[in-house]
Length: 330
Image (cartoon, rainbow, N blue to C red; front, side):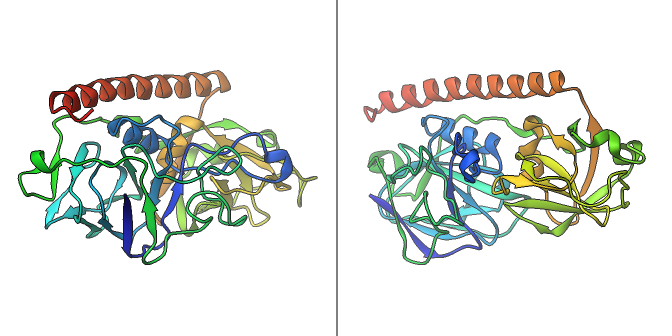
């Protein structure tokens, strides 16, 4: 019961919703960059939201399914294919044993996520399945996937009688997540040093763009150089995912999943939690513009997003259970 990596991707790792409670020890929460996609794919295959999934960048790995299972893809669209046919995002798919999954080319987004029904059979580290690359712990052997890795599955599924000798079958329901992402402005709250900017309006009225230096640790932006009244670095203190730090050259960096746990640059703003998945799907050269919201609005927007994902998850679970029971497979 496994999936074999035939060709490794750029950096494919197992991630979940993060590892919390250890930041005071220097261990960041980590986890998936796009948590909307993680919740979506887990819901589609009937998993709990916190189950580990594959986070893939393009070029992504190609996989041989050594046993049948149910999968779902969400997030970035890399043109996933089996048997010469394109797999849709945000729909559950039955996959036969010996099917070959590969990705032809990126269409949108920066990260694609794949869940398997029942999850990958791996051990959590400090309460999470997420891969912590610097600690070489968690996920699959604490590292990105390599050629001939065999990812063990917790559940075996035999859908032979439903597949009619085909390699896969798309099930007839989907999750619509597109309207949970913002395609225009990223919403931010003011940071501790926001009012120390010489002209805070410049942050909100100018376009910035992602550079090629965007990864799981941070997104470096370029654009108008902002000025700050307080020269140099501050005393180091705790920082969190989404914090926007101002570098000495006036450019900004947004901390992402694998951020350091402390920092000494001015924290001029924070990308709200509801919009971090949108940032995670930004690619180099993509424009970024900010809109300021209150902390109360940020909390409410995140709450509404989680509530909607929970409702979608409940609906998917009922659909999948009903479908599998009809074929005596549940």
